[in-house]
Image 1 (cartoon, rainbow, N blue to C red):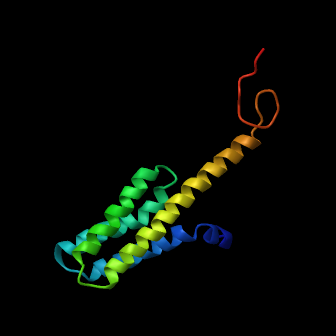
Image 2: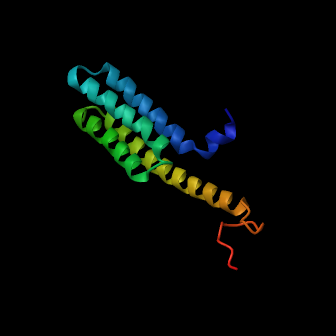
Image 3: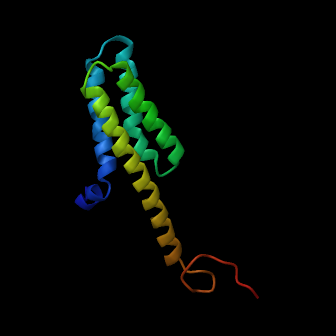
Length: 127
C-alpha cells in the first residue's frame, strides 16, 4: 500500500482502527451487550468507507455505531472515550472523503475535453 495514501486519509485509517478497538472491547463483553458492541464496531468501521457515496448515511452509521455501545458501557472510562475519539476522527474522515471526492471529480471534468476539443466541462456546442 502506498504510504502517501495513508497520510492523506489519516482520519479514515484512525477511525477504522478505533472501530477495531470497539470490536475488541465488545468481544470481552457478555450477553446482549456483546452483540450490540459488535454491531457498533461494524458501524464505526464502515462509516468512513461509505462516505464517498453518501455523507448522511456515513454520519448516521458513525453516530449509531459510537453512541449506543458507549452508553451501554458507561461505567468504563475506556469505551466512552474511544467512542468520542471515533466520533471526532470519523467526522473529520467523512469531511475529508467528501471534499477529496468532489475535488477529484472537478479535476476529471477539467481534464476531459469537451466536444469542441477544449478542456473543461462538457457543454453543448451552440451553432
